[in-house]
Image 1: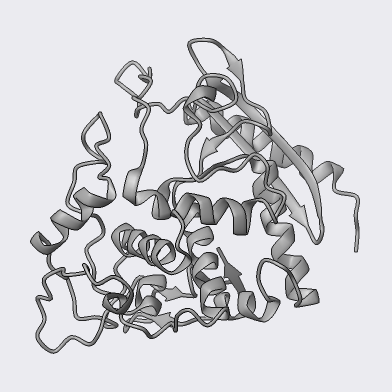
Image 2: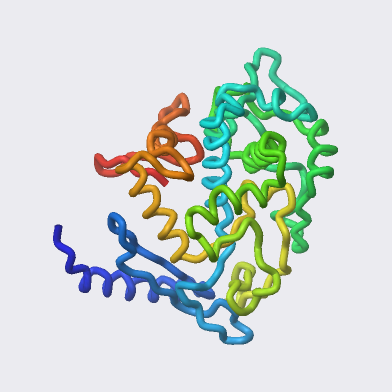
Amino acid sequence: MNTNFAEPLQVISNWLEAQRDYKNSPSIAAAIVVGDKMIWSDAFGYSDLSQQVKATDSTIYSICSISKLFTSIAIMQLRDRGLLNLDDPISEHLPWFNIEQAHAKSGQLTIRSSLTHSSGLPRESDFPYWTDPEFPFPDWEELRKKLPEQQTLYPASTFYQYSNLGMSLLGAVIERLAGIPYKAYILEHLLKPLGMEDTRPELPEDLRGSLLATGYSVESRDRSREALAFFKTGSITPAVGLSSTVKDLAKFAIWQFKILDTVEDPVLNGNTLREMHQVHWMDPDWANHRGLGFGINRLDGETIVS
């Protein structure tokens, strides 16, 4: 393999910096992994505009839906321990799961259908946390109380419907079966063993404006952006609540390549990860392909796992 990446990496660096400038993004951070090595990482712009804090490859960002991968791996750990089966109904592990089933002929809403976003559940818990500027994410009690007021969108295992609610419910399954809070489980069973020291199952408020990047609004007409209110993701954390750096996410990628080759690993068996990387759901139009927590696509004859 040609390992002289200097010229293409310079092109990538120039392109990212130009994209950040063109799109007026506060900052961009990126890393590239080849095999078992991170060959490049860098950041452009400012993690806090008012204080002119320069972004680095150690800047902490909300990783939003990448959080779902950690929740999915935790579910597979519990499966491998014999504490659940992928085709168990969610209600078997969450007695309070009582959303209105709007489709009389629907099958069960299962662990697998939540992992593949084919459960028919709504995209969100019924709170305006993406539209209210205060980001009112519900706690677990609020989510439970609201659930019976919602109803399914489709019969289970019929169509692809991306669902933060479904992944959040899997976080509740983890709590119940592990007997400890979701955040504690993710920290002890994934982040620490993976050596992801700058990744957290939350946003570290005390680091905002320094190591934690400040969140900003969309552009106004004069291209300015307003700093957004800090938020805690509450019961939606299993879907969107983790924070990390590009260097830690590079570790996460390297770990996957490693265990796919070696199989045995204290965090997850390589064959289980391979199972997660395979297609477990395909929409009737063949347009959406889902693994267990992962997206699976084809591009120019190659399979892309993301």
